[in-house]
Image (cartoon, rainbow over all chains, first blue to last red; front, side):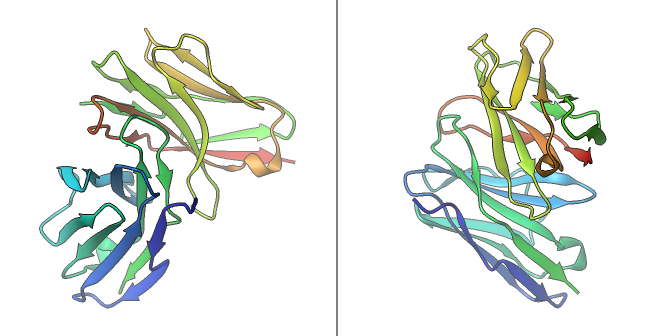
Length: 113
Length: 116
């Protein structure tokens, strides 16, 4: 089975532009997670879904960030408008929903200039 | 709230030697899971080992083993016969709760250097 698939792998954008990151979880996994990794703050949980429903979005930094999961095989994380401090690696991960191993995508490297 | 603490920002080990990475956590739940993940320079997050809290036996995976002390809320990772390919960031992680609400919390990581 394919792993968690993220796109784009790398994105460079100008401040103020909208950024959309995409994720396809592993088939059969009911939980999906979005993490952000920076040198300063480490690996932060932004939001997670179970059965396509957001369970906890307390990690979303501010209103500029939004996430959706319209179906079991697709999720997006959107930043609008983007700022230089949003530069980070954004990881999507999925898991069965039962406390099993969480599997990560390869990450989306975002640079906002 | 659950927390995971890794107090060693960086560790070094000589090739073929043994090193132990520390992790402590805080939780009020009785049933939970603990993990160690490895992140090489490629940034890929790779599972190293998983421990179920209700199991008293320490998990082992080849050269990797854990020392799980539930009462002390400690979960250390021992790497035996260290190899150059073991050099990476290592993250300790916790999850617990009810099915469908598992929230995976990660520590700040320990950078492991392996010296030839």
